[in-house]
Image 1 (tube, chains in turn blue, cyan, green):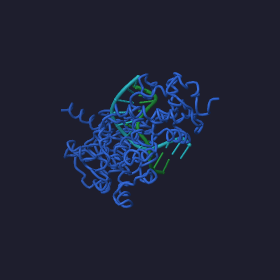
Image 2 (cartoon, helix red, strand yellow):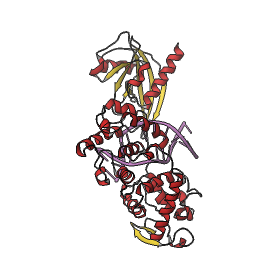
Image 3 (cartoon, helix red, strand yellow):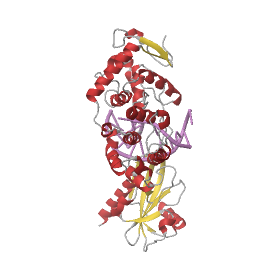
Length: 396
DNA sequence: CATCCGTGGGG
DNA sequence: TCCCCAAGGAT
């Protein structure tokens, strides 16, 4: 009888694979017995010792460095993180430095990495460490989880890697590997199924080397056990892998989700004053791209007048000046976020004078195009700058 | 619990 | 071009 969260039984593979014995049923999953668990740990860690990736944060035992890397790695790939990690550690080498950082400095170092609330939460966590833990990171998963931005996964990762606590660090890799190992058909995107993976992985985890065990699952997930591909025949765990043995690894993990993205049409005002500066403004402190800078963006609702007329009107209302706006866009930028798409028409405008009092009052500033490193811009704004640059270059 | 929150790479 | 995906957490 197949267990409720498992598509196949281990018993048929006793002796015909690396599966030597059968263990208890855990949350509906029939798992290995102690001999097989030992053999699996040994094989996984031997492979890890031989083949582990040489990553900058793996040279560190400092929990601060581990923490920085883990936050950056949330939903973000290793190759993207590496340059940001070096820059961040250089600029904020310890908890105290981070706890005193300014919003603008934090966003500037995080620019282009995405999910910007992560770095804001990091500073709050750094302040917690300074004030509640005397500047030293707490050493248990339970305490780490109390810090802002540190949840079930990250607390497990830091506790196991930096402090050798025998707790799992369950991310997408760990769930993918284990769903394949035991042919677990529970949907990994459902919160209620987390307990299944937590219980099974905690059972198999090597209590002597929890940090290496957890990181080995990550390396496996980025090499032989890739998403959208079946388990690789060369995978070092193939003989333990029930889905591989039954030729069904492409069915795991089970995962639904995907939110449909909504497209929003925007008009961007690229207004140049008599000094040759462009108007920028800081976005609200909550929501998408919070506290980052963009040129003024106006949503284009369906039954509007021509865009340039809107821009003139709205500029008058909001900024109290009246620019000369070109009637046709000088360019277009498309930007895809995780859950929405911006289609932006770029309108060039000129101002025959300079309105200095705008700054401070409306969180606005006038900016020379050679001064882009003074503010934190999201990627969509960098695309707008490039389109503007191309336009101005061709215009000469 | 479902939705919000970025970005770059790969098929 | 389009869709999926990646070392999640807050709300």
